[in-house]
Length: 452
Image (cartoon, rainbow, N blue to C red; front, side, top):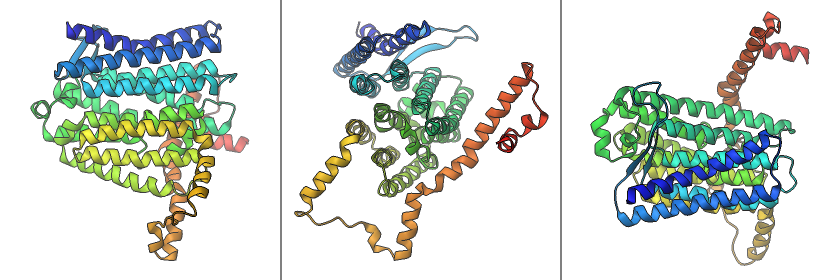
């Protein structure tokens, strides 16, 4: 009876944001968008319902004190034996993170209702927000790789679209394309890990990765576990802006402030950390991957700590401050401090949510605080004063230029991605009957620059 009630609660909690997406999206497709009042009311109600039922499920799971449960809702495809099932792996960690995601989305929905009042893309914003929350809940509760990958893609797609929310601004569109390009690397690594898991283990169940350590050792060899763990770390690095993918994070601040709060302050940037936390049994079986995760987290925290000290706008400063804590959370996971990492993740998500939502007032409050405390406390002295003058200048330039990562990402990720997309667009136009010069198909960038 408890399993049945828990299954219905989980289904209702995940289905509520999907239903909101269907209602708002269907009304927009019919060119009958709902009024702002109804959109805000439905969004807040949907997130509140999702949070309430997931919290109830968390209480039930905690009261019964049973282990992880795999909830399956049947096969939805007959393309191969067994089909593709919608499965949720439910335990206190997954339910807790899912409830946290729904609660934060509810707060952001209430804030956005007035913040985006009379904005032309008001309904579009809430459609993307509901899509994002649906993806986060799938990532939190995924029981097989299909559900995890769908949720992972929904989070990435909605994130990129909200970065380019103000599509009349060239900078917003360019930065959205940059974010989307980096996410392609993360998604490719995630897909490779899923395919490798299916190949070496013969199953798509995530209980092999997220379950007890004995299940991992029984199903995977050390080499296979290390390969899958490294691919997961690459996927997490792209989604959570760990080095060397940190350059896209400040550029993602082009979206509305509420979307920056829920994406890059609270939830999206922590999605990779939560996935790494769930994969802790796999990391315990792959020491090399644990070392890699720890080094990446430590280097990212140090880099972000330097970069946040020289940012000229408050949102970029908060973004790098968030990245500093994300790096430390990854280090905690690599060290095996899983409970501390989960508490750190939840507390930091709530704290950054408050900071991002109050970003317009942060500078005013900070200046007032400095004026109040200036006569009572000595000025802080950074460790950089211990370095020689020339090294201080180099360190300042390195932090100011954000580690020169933009040029690296442009050359290795963004430019190849956009060039391939242009060639595919020209090929599609040619196949559809539009005659294009051969030079334009082979070198669209050079031809465009010559035309300009």
